[in-house]
Image 1 (cartoon, helix red, strand yellow):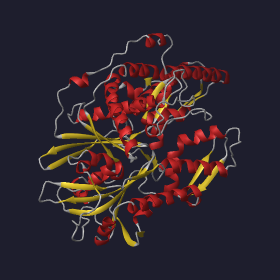
Image 2 (cartoon, one colour; image 1 turned 180 degrees about the horizontal axis):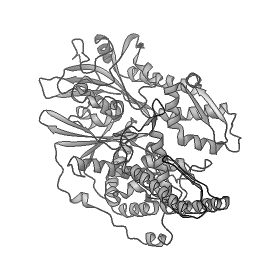
Image 3 (cartoon, helix red, strand yellow; image 1 turned 90 degrees about the vertical axis):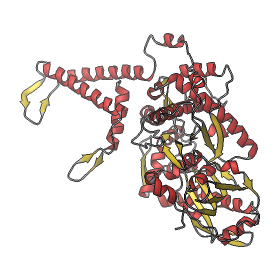
Image 4 (cartoon, one colour; image 1 turned 90 degrees about the horizontal axis):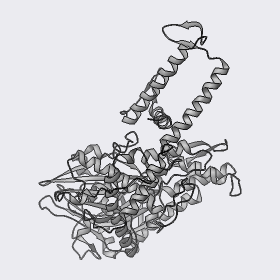
Length: 591
């Protein structure tokens, strides 16, 4: 372990320490292997420097020692020399950690990349198990479901453990990519830590929303210098594949702990798009996920430690030189569809009309479903109401930008400010933590890059025109969903006493999102009551209570991995008069 990596890990460890009463502190959770190595590294440095100081003549003043402390006095000249030596050693350590050691660059450039294609030679994966990947804008999730007769064995994979971020979340993986100053790809929390350490005066940037380049048709756009300090020309599509490679390696590590093969069939979730775009994005993502498995097998645990960009690019070029069939990547599903599938109980009785609202970091998606299940039959059915799927490209990241501009405006930093771009970049690196603090505490105090202290309150943030516009767009999207479906579905909602609204995703607890599940709405001259369905389905509460806290974010992957997938039952234009009575919200009762 080198100095810069140890410093990052120790800084993270200190952040996790919580104060108790009587000047005591505690460290919640467990130590990662990296944190333990960092502590050993720091101890070894202290032990060595202490021994050197004690061995030097004239260093001790008065031999002042007692059982509690040792006083060491170092002459000024010696202190300056030691500081210079320390700085020089640190610079060397950082260079060696971040990139290739001097003299090794030519060796790496000439190194022969050999792809690991063993996944194609593996025996066929079992049919009684499925994997669903939810590649998220902010956090990525994955769930394994194993059939055990009539019972479904659900395993939300602990991606945070091999991803080396259990203190953030054991079940979610940060969707960030960063190329460090020495040309190494960093992923997840490591990407966040290195970017904050190397951020400097706002010259560097980290990609926190690599998923957007898939839907914005920007895969071939070149990565600018702020994101890529190397001389290697790469596109955003390369960074997208790089992150999927890291995520796939983490998933493979988790599958191995469940004795499941790397070629296990996997579904994948994606946002709601119009039909033609949805097909194009699904086809592209299916290939990328297949390629990611080969690259994950090729590089293995090196991905966790940081991978030289030049090696990754060489491997990608070799991989794309030949077309392959990635049969283990199967169906795609929309994010609301995955949530709806997670709601259905295999034991309880359900017959309801439900609107699923999934608000993530990059998109906000909605869709209407007729959910049906009966404990007396093996059939669990759900039909997506034809024409009800809607999505807007405003979500958590949109609020991040609104908060950045509020901070800049309060500080009087306009577009003509000479350091506007640097200050914005610096804020972007920390914005997720800032936004969370604002909503939790009701206020936020930030010291900008130029030293100015700025404070904002939650109330003034919520009164911003851009934030009010986001709330209006969400409400308008919901109205469009209901206005675009056949009137018979509105009658179903009226007969059932209201429309059940399920809120999921990382933004489920935002005030403007909660507002979607309350009050009445006028549709075609009819008033419909909106019922906020419980945040955690009853059947999961009974069988998997430990999943409650994470459910809003893992619902997509959990539902997508279940045996019966809603997509297989198609869409319905009208109810066909098949709802004679009052639907019951069994499994997710109204509050």
